[in-house]
Structures are given as structure tokens and as C-alpha cells.
Amino acid sequence: MPQARLSEAERRYTPPETPRVRFPGDPDQKEDYERAERQRARERRRERDSRHHLPPSPPSSREPSRERSRSRPSSRRDSSRAPSSRRSSRGASRVSVARTPEPEEKPWFKKKTLWASVATLATVASLVPTTRAANASVRASEASQKSADASVRSARAGERSARAGERSAGAGERSAGAGEQSARAATNTTVASGHMDPLGRYTGPAKNAMIEDGRRIGGRRAIEYGGGSVRSGQSNHSGGSHGRRRH
Image (cartoon, rainbow, N blue to C red; front, side, top):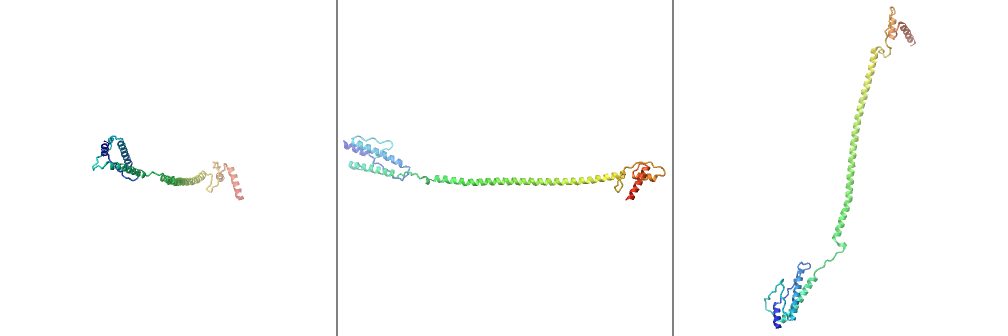
């Protein structure tokens, strides 16, 4: 009876698949490792059942049992091969797990992010003096523009002052001409009124004197010299003669 049970267990036994050896970092490595672990668990259950003469547990629904196509060897050869296959699968899984490299943390002075940050800060620091120089140049140009505008305004004010001086000089000339014309008009008025002779000497106001018969010359002289009567005309005549003699 045990022989029959062992043969049935051996008939249903499926050899484990040899896990593929993958390079470190392969995404399918974890899946292969889990598949190998499940296969080893099934082998352990079958071995325990064979020892206690129990029927083998049915295969899981995830992985259906596969029928062996070739002829089955004796029980000793199968029992001797099973542990070796388990050992090979375990060794392969250990090798695959051992080949997985662990990420090593780089020292702080070898990190690219650190040096990239330092380069960025250096670039920003180099741009600060350039920005300040550009702002100073802009302010200097604005000051130069204001100075030029002030110079233009000063020149225009000078032109207006020169024009005002020209107008003042013209007004002075016109005033002098008007004064000269006024003086000429006054002279002509006095000459026309008889108070001044053509040589510019003042003769006094003319008075109407009564001239008697026989004294026309004296009265005429009195009228010429501004006398009011014959007697006054004679006195003026005598004074004028004395003055002429003195001269």
C-alpha cells in the first residue's frame, strides 16, 4: 500500500522550474523568487505527506499540475533527484538574490544636486553687480537728459532776454526821438510866440504899448525890447546902449 501511494505521489510530482538567472535590477526577479518559494513550499508539503503516508494535497488553482510526458523512473531515482533539484533551485535563488546590488549613498561632496545648486548661486551672484551697474547707467543717462533739458530751457530764456533787450533799446531810441521832437516843438512854439529870436535869445512877452506921434522909433524899440511905455522903452534903450558900450 505505501508503494502505491508513493507511486501516485511521484506521478503527480512536478519538478520545479529552474529559475532564470537575471542581471541585477531585473523587474522580473522578484516574481521569479516568489514562484520558486511557492514551488519549495509545495515540495515540503509533498515530502511531509509521503513520510506520514498521507495522500498528497491537491495542487493550487494558480499553477495547475503538469503531466510528465516522458517515462517515469524508479522511486529511488525520483526521491534522490528531488532534494538535488530543491538544492539547485535554492542555490539559484540565493545567487539571484545575492546579485541584487544595494544602492550606495554617495557622500555629500559627490552629489550632483549640491554642485548644481552651487553653480546656480554663483550665476545669480554674478548677475547682481551687472544689474546694479545697469541701473546706475540708466540713472546717469536720466540725469544727463535732465541736464540737457535744463540747458535748452536756459538758452531759450537767454534768447527771450536778448529780444526783450532789443525791444527796450528800440523803445529808448523812440523815446529819445520823441524828446528831440518835443524840444524842437517847444523851440518852434516859443519862436512863433515871439518870446525868442531865431538865435535862441529870450525876448520876453510882447506888450501892446501906446506910441505917441513923433515917438514911433522909441516906441518901436520899446516894443522890440519888451517895454510897456515910451519911457520904459527909452530906459530900456539907454540900458541896452550902455550894455552894448560895455561890451
